[in-house]
Length: 185
Image (cartoon, rainbow, N blue to C red; front, side):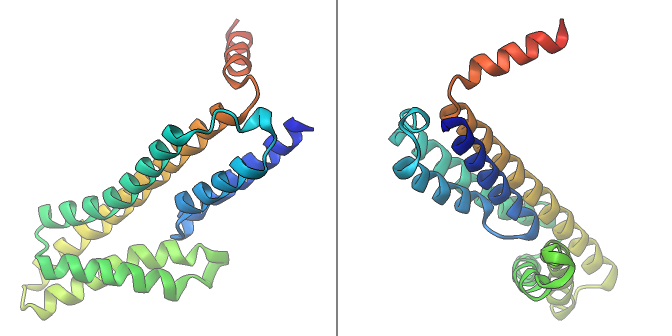
């Protein structure tokens, strides 16, 4: 019975992690699931979930949020975006993801976040009397930065999921090691 509950919980954590693809706070939802699991999960799958583990995963989730925006800002700046253009990219990304969320089964939020970052930066740069070619180059920088930041945050979410599996799955390290040994030999 414990294995069934653990597998079901891992599926919920995986689904929460994937919510980042549609610009929802998947890492934070996964952490909320993990807190609930700590209190209602079977003892065999919760005894390793201590304060240090929670501080680590909250730190990783916070790092993901920070890096998502820092990468967008830094790459935009490297490609010529001004401070106003970067702010426009952030605003555009948020507005675009909200407006396009209902489209394409939720994947519109991803498209909206990326296009919104581009359009927001472009509008703010053009409003600042930047030449069109410079504004477009800056907007591409913000667009690519947003994409890479979202990818990094998703990667950190997968790391949180993997660490969680290692902490809640009864005998997970041994099972993984045996699986790897049997597959390569």
